[in-house]
Image 1 (cartoon, rainbow, N blue to C red):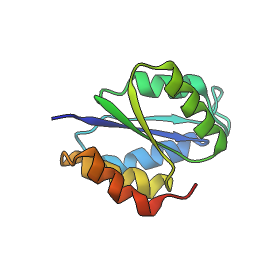
Image 2: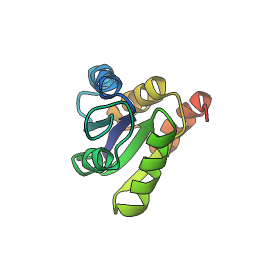
Image 3: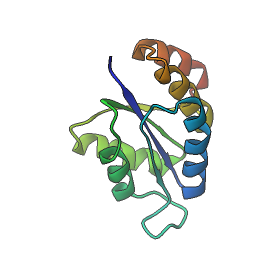
Length: 123
């Protein structure tokens, strides 16, 4: 069975860590990695941190969630550079990541996970 990993990209390292804490409770068996803030831990986005979060994630495919503009832009840039399969979702960060994690934890097929994410699309 395919195992999905989750990557959380946020402008804030605290938000990224908090979302990971929350969804880890519901999905203890998933690989959940984060990229929060800039390289010097300011508010912002870091391509290098996103790269590390993807590289360190042990999922066969990655379900990626982000918060704001440059997080999305850097995530999309990385998606063009990596060999890993990354599914990016334009949904509410906390609710989307939580929904995906709880479903992935019980080996729900991707098509079902994506159906459950539809109502959470915000962008």
